Amino acid sequence: MIVKETNRKAIVIGTSSGIGRALARLLGESGYEVGLAGRRIELMEELRREINAPTHLKAMDLTCPDEARELLGALIDEIGDVELIVVNSGVGHTDPPWEEELKIMRVNVVGFAAVANRAMEYFIERGSGHLVGISSISGLRGLRAAYSASKAFDSTYLEGLRLKADRLGLDIQVTDIKPGFVDTEMTAGREDMFWVTTPEEAARQIYAAIRKKRRHVYVTRRWRLMGWLMKSLPYPIVSRIVSRKR
Ligand SMILES: NC(=O)c1ccc[n+]([C@@H]2O[C@H](COP(=O)([O-])OP(=O)(O)OC[C@H]3O[C@@H](n4cnc5c(N)ncnc54)[C@H](OP(=O)(O)O)[C@@H]3O)[C@@H](O)[C@H]2O)c1
Image 1 (cartoon, rainbow, N blue to C red):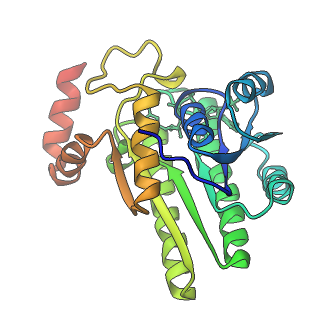
Image 2 (image 1 turned 180 degrees about the vertical axis):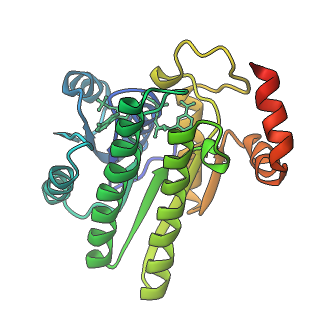
């Protein structure tokens, strides 16, 4: 059942496809006024027509971090009194060449930090707010070098921002979402996936975590067990599992 919110405003960065698109739609259905950001403007225009709520749109490329920060500031000013900002944008491939690894780091590390930091600046100025970052279960071990490292960065960066808010004694929540496998453009064609969920189910669980102001969440919930295993297994066992899959 969808609980209708009133006078609530959110921004989701990375809404042209996948998890971000489903989450933006769900926030709109739940009564939020929603700011959409990403590069593929035509897909977001289409989403805008589907969402039955006021929406705002900004073309934003996280590989241009200074510009992305400015655009996020402009989107916040346009919407006004935004209480929730979700940094969802991300790219990832298995064993990519260096050029793709660099892109992963530009988007998932520098771009992610640029807008998460800008969101935090705004919430500090506002005195409250909720920052949500989509990292990944992949960040728990170096299973895919650049992608895993970038997602470990995202989780640690979010923890740093949460501790900063605690130090300042402000009512700012920071939620780190760690998805397992979700059936999106990013995972299209992969044949090694299991426990795969839809973007819609992922969005439902993310929204539930937002409402409960959770600090860390695995999506779907069963990935919590895998998260514990991934953190606990000694390196030689991880290496054996990965080598057997070849
Ligand atoms: N699917 C999974 O199994 C899975 C698992 C764990 C974590 N995640 C994470 O979940 C998040 C969403 O991914 P998804 O699975 O929904 O994949 P997706 O459908 O490929 O969505 C990725 C989103 O990121 C945006 N994006 C990519 N490059 C960008 C850039 N340079 N600047 C701004 N936005 C950019 C894309 O929008 P534009 O292309 O329009 O810019 C798109 O909206 C990512 O952070 C991903 O790492 C996914």
